[in-house]
Length: 406
Image (cartoon, rainbow, N blue to C red; front, side, top):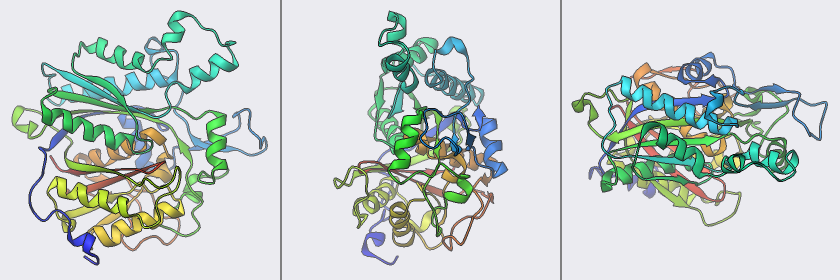
C-alpha cells in the first residue's frame, strides 16, 4: 500500500458483525421490468438511456433528452403510479426468487425501503393537473407509508418496516441497516427495496443546470468514468429489491447469490453538492468497511465504483483505488449503461455484482477512451473474489458495502 491509510485496513482481525446472505433479487430498470431484461441489457453493452423527444416542458425543444426512464408497465392494481408499481414488482420478484432458491420467511420479516424522491409523478399531478385536490384514496397514494404497507399486507409480514434516505448512498445504507437489524435479532429476514422513479422535466433540467448531467448525447459518449473528456452522467430510474437473511444460509437449504460481509457509512460534513477535496471521509468509509468485513485491501478483486463520470468523483475514487485497495483490484462503473438512478443507484449497480457471482461475468461497459490501467473494458469473466461497492451521495453521504461469494 502506498499510504498509511491503506496499510490500516482490516488487519486480519475478522468481521465485526455476522455476514448476511442475499438470496433474492428483483429489478425494474430502464431496460425493462424484471431481472432478465436487466441482465440482457447490461450484457448488450448498450445504454438503457434512449433519446426522448416528448419531455415537456423542456427549454431546448429541438434537443433530444437522453435518459433511462422505466417503461410505464407493471400491474395496474399495484398503484396509479410507476413508482408504486415498480416498488411492488421488484419486491414481489425478489421474494418469489428467494423462495424458488429455498428461502422461506421466518417468523418476523422486516422491510426497509430506501427512497429519496417518492411519488414524484402523483405530487406533480396534484399541483399541476388536479387543482390541488384528489380523493381520499388518491391522497393516501401520496403517503410514503402506503407502498410499504401494501407490500407488508400482501405477504403478511409483521416485522419492522421503515423508509431510509441517504441520497445516492441510500441503497448501501439500507443493506447495512438490514444487517444491523438481523444482528440485533429484530427480525429473521429483511426485504430491502430501493426506488427512484423521478425523471420529471423539472428534475432532469435541474440536474443538467447543476452541471453534472449530460442530457443531449448517448451516455456511452458522455459518461466516461475514470476517462478524459467525461461530461457527467445520464439520468436513470430503477426499483431494486433484495431478500436478505442470516449468513451461511446454504446450510439451511438456501442458494444465495452472495454474502454481504460488512460495510461502513461516513459523512463529509463539507458541502451540499461537492465532495470534500481531500476525500478523507470517502477513504475512511472504504477502509472502515473492509475492517468491518474482516478483509485486507489485497483481498479485494473488484471495485464497483460509484463512478458517475464527474471530475470530483473520479478524483476521489482514483484515490480509493490507488491508495486504499490492492494493486490487483479491478475497477468498473455501470452508470454509462444504467444512467444515474439517484436513490436507487447503488442498489441497482450492486444487483449486477450479486448476479455476477452466479453468472460468472461482470457486465462492465466498454471504455470510450483511455481509462484507469486497472479498469475493465467490457464484460469480464468473474469466478469469485471480494467486491467493494462505493456510493457517494449528494450532501456528503458515503456508504460502502463488501460482498463475497456465498
